[in-house]
Image (cartoon, rainbow, N blue to C red):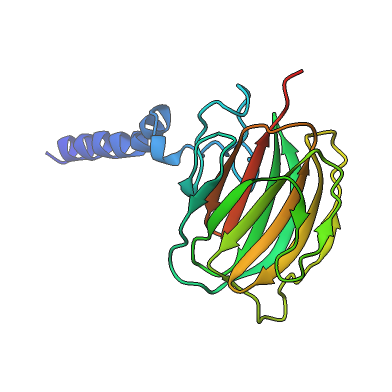
Length: 208
């Protein structure tokens, strides 16, 4: 009887010892490290199919591509403070980004005009392009130490259609930025992004 108990105990111990080895031979998806995501532009991904192709975005609101004036209302209050303006080229578009401090979503009025006129002062600015894209962001305010008060001029050097950008500043609840466009009108679109709040104006590259 004693010999039989010893044999049983030995078999059980051998089986328990083998469990970790069997577990190591299996596949546990939860233990597999996740593959890191590909880096993307902070202002939205670019599409290899060109500026007019659909692309995923984090836009709170977005317009379609076109050459006519485009508008959208702000959401979440009027406390946005302009803190930065930048101009980049991504794939086949020139991208003008207005970045704000605050959690609201900016609205916009964006359209082509014949000359760059600064609101408030009436000053006419020479931006070197045949056309001017007049950009207004609404839902904004300015009394803050880090506010970008303008005016300042940004000159892209990437050979796109945007010749220069003039940051006019904030006046009566709207922030104005003027962009010179080389040649005639080309399609553009506008997107409002969150985290942080941004207004992104994309201008299509001219064919040819």
